[in-house]
Amino acid sequence: MPVSVTKNPGQGNAPFFSSGSISFSELRNKFTDDQPGFGQQISASQLRRNTDVSIENPIVPDSTENEQISTSNNLKLSQFRNSIKRYLATQSGTDDNSSYPGEPGFRMGLYASNGRGIDWSGGGVNGRDGQGGNNTGNHIKNVQKGVLITGTCGSVQAGVPAAQVAPRLTVHNMRIDVSGSILGYGGAGGTVQDGNAEDGAVALNLGTLGKNNRVIVGSGARIYGGGGGGEKGYKGANGANGRCRDVINTSNCGGCPGCPGGYSSSGCRRGGGCRRKQVCNWWGNCWRETDAWDHFETCTKVYDTTGGIGGDGGNGGRGRGYNNQGGPSGGSGGNAGTPGQGCFAGGGPDPAAEAGKTGGTGGTGGDWGQRGGETSGPGNPGNGGAAINRSSGEGYDLYGTVNNNTIRGAVNR
Image (cartoon, rainbow, N blue to C red; front, side, top):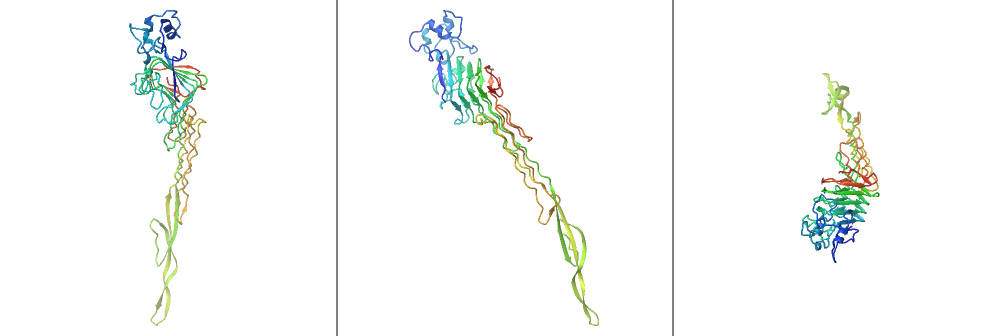
C-alpha cells in the first residue's frame, strides 16, 4: 500500500512556518522540542543548519527542505519558511512483492514510478527522494526519518527480503519502529536428486548503513526470517545382481550335435538307432541293419543379470514463510525402484536379480528462520533466512522487546 509521510509529526504534521511571522521563541519551541536545557533563550549560532551525519539529533537538521537555511553567519529568519525537524513514514495494510518481480515486499528506498519507496519531501519520481533525483535526497542526510510498520510486509520471491531499506545508498538517522509483521520467504524443498534445497529469505534487510540507525521492536511485532527448504530424500540403493541359468537339450542322428555359441556341454551321450540300411550277402539274402545312432547333449548357459535401479528420493518440504504461513511442510515419500533384469525365455533365476530399493522421504521444511530438515543424501537443506540483516556499512542499535516471540532467525549486526 502507499506509504503516508508526515512532516514534523506531533508538531502540526506540516512544514514549519508555511505562512505568518517567524520568531526566535517559536524557533526555540519547534527545534528544541525534545532537547531540554535551552531555557528561554536560543542563539542564532545554534539555529544554523547542521550537516554532520554523526549527530543523532541535530537542532536544525540537514534535509532537502532545509537547504535554504544557512550553515554559516548569514542566517535569516526567513530561511526557516517551510522547514523540517523530522519525518515519519507509516506503513499499514499489506505490502508484498507478488506483483513486483525482484523487488522487496516493502520498499523503504527511493521513490519509484510504481508508487513504491518513500518520498520524504514529496517531490515525486524526479524529486530529490525519487529514483530520478541523483541520490541526493533525505535518505543520506542527518534529518531523523522514522518508519512505523504497523501492517504486514512479506515476500513471495526466493532470495528477496520482505522489507528493505535503500541498498545502494548510505542511510543515516533512520528509525524503523515495528509493531506489525515482517515475514520472510519460505524456501522450496529440494527436487533435484543430490541437489540443494532453497534457502529461506531475510525478513528485514537494512542495506548499507551509515550513522545513527536503529530498529525498535514492539511487543506485538513479528520479524521472522523464512525457513529453509527440506533436503530431497536419498536415492534408493540398486538391487543386488542375479544369475540366470538357461538349459537346452540338443540331439543329432549320427553324431554329437554340439552346443550353440555361449553354451557349454555336459557331455555327449548315445541313444538308440535312428537310421537303418539294407544289407545283402552273396547268396542274395537281404536284411536291414541300424546304420546310425541318436546322440544327445545337455547345453547350459550361465549369465549375470543386473539389479533394478534405486528409486529417487522424495521431494523436500517447503520452509515456513510469508508464502507458507501454516507451518513447515513435510517431505514426500521416496519413489519405488525398478524391477531387476529378468532371464531369457526358457531360463531360470539362480538367484533372481533384486528390484531397486525405494528412495528416502524428503526432509521437512524449516520453521521460521530455521534450516530445513536433512536426509542422508549428499545434497543440502536450505538455510534459514535472517530476521534482520545488514548488507554493509556501520552497525545499528536494536531496542524494544527482543525475544523468540518477536524475532525469529539470525540478527546480523
